[in-house]
Image 1: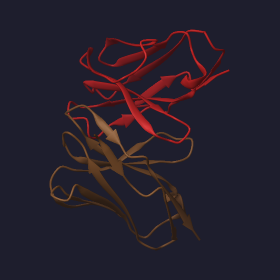
Image 2: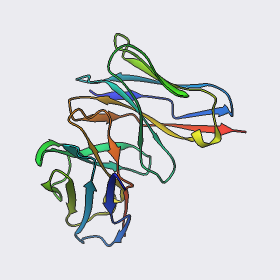
Image 3: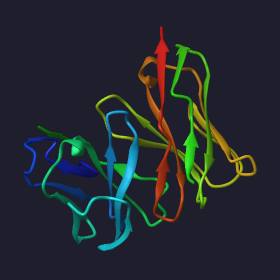
Image 4: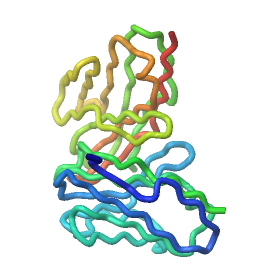
Length: 112
Length: 109
């Protein structure tokens, strides 16, 4: 059974489009995260939810909107995609104390 | 400011021991973690230190000195499959991890 899953694995789209990435975890964790990893492999937190409540919202353009329908799911919607949004987006989850996080396989987003 | 520093690249021979250092400067401290990431893969959790000292998990050990804002990951009996990127990460709050820029480890035969 996959612990943290993301769909789609690859996403190629044009500038200006709107797209969504879905994430689900079956680990029973309370906290979920979205990270962006750029071409230099720098991994940066974007958002974090604990029990469906937004607890971390880093300096991310408001074109990015996370949604957590329940504590097992955290989706990421991106409006008006730009070239600079091209990256790998990872979903992760953890128990309340977030030092041990479990990552999904990643979604490679390419904006052309 | 918040920063974590680790070497960008390390090369070692199969069977050897390698140490990857990490120094940090963060506004909060909720422990030091280490993650491994193979090319094209996802980061996977390796170890966590909340208190000073050495934590051992099989071939991997991790050390923390809070007074020096310093830690390291020690990999013993290196295998080819250990070739990957290794990230240190500091818990800046209960929920937030700040990652270093990663150390690319290349294990040669």
